Image (cartoon, rainbow, N blue to C red; front, side, top):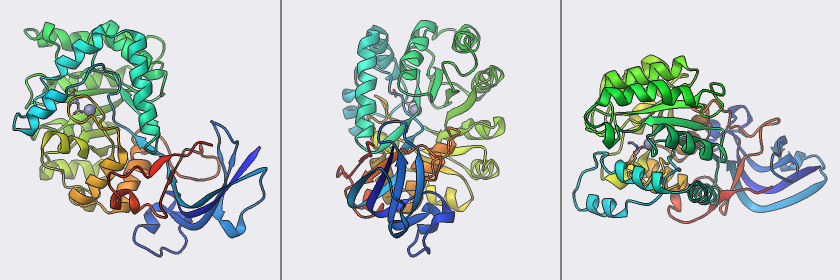
Length: 401
Ligand SMILES: N=CN[C@@H](CCC(=O)O)C(=O)O
Ligand SMILES: [Zn+2]
């Protein structure tokens, strides 16, 4: 079976070779085709793209669907989330809005609630969050553990996350749990020893694709540069790819460590100096800087200067960081709107960052091209510009085939 999609006012392919004349800023980066059509295998899940081009040249197909002059984009790739948690921390958010700073201490509240939840409760919570994301255009999601912090609870979080995505990340090194507060080294030993051994017991990528660490000397709860190096090197030796929470609360060693070790992504990048930017630019093609503007919004922090990073040659991705503490928003359109309004990105750069670049940080290709999975989203609008222009309005959703 094949399905012809017509009535596409603007198709973002993320394939610069496909742009139809670069009529507007961003067309080349996004590979925009106007008055486009698509043929996909299907209908049904698992469909692949078979043909892309101008509607006037579309081949015949078994079925046909008219999208009525809407824009079609690659589904968003949310490459940084913490969806496996119970409870919420709305009171902590309210306190922050009246001046209480974020220091990572509230993570212990979510750890307690998550440990107390049953498997079915956690599974239902993750399912609801993934559905909420699809309803906003996200078709691929990375999910971290990190609210278990015992061997059993971290494995349980990863198993539940794996029911929803192959892109799972072991974040046993989220914070030092309270029971290890007087012996941090013992917790690092647990993460790099028995926990990591259990994560890779059935093969390096059976349960987790990556390892992550909250490298943050400005939080008493997180890990310093030496601890983070130990954890990342152990993860790499066990066959996992590397991701880092770095430079979130103040300047620190996370960004340069991530670049040095060849991490796929270093996330937050809120406080950077010139040497960090140089390291990220030199790591282009290997290490992506994943910016999470929903966190700056929800913690009243300064936004990173995405414009300066892009102009310096850094690969910049956008993700939601959906989590109960620093950003309980699963909305990539919200992140795009913030990136455009507050961080100096063009609408095209922001869309590219939330699709092509975030995909690359997960080892994926997010172009709309023959042979690619038909992971698509559709806008109730004629152009991708409306993602930021109509901020807060639910105009984008995953395209169900
Ligand atoms: N910074 C570390 N981890 C999360 C916050 C987790 C929490 O506060 O529950 C983040 O990405 O911001
Ligand atoms: Zn995070």
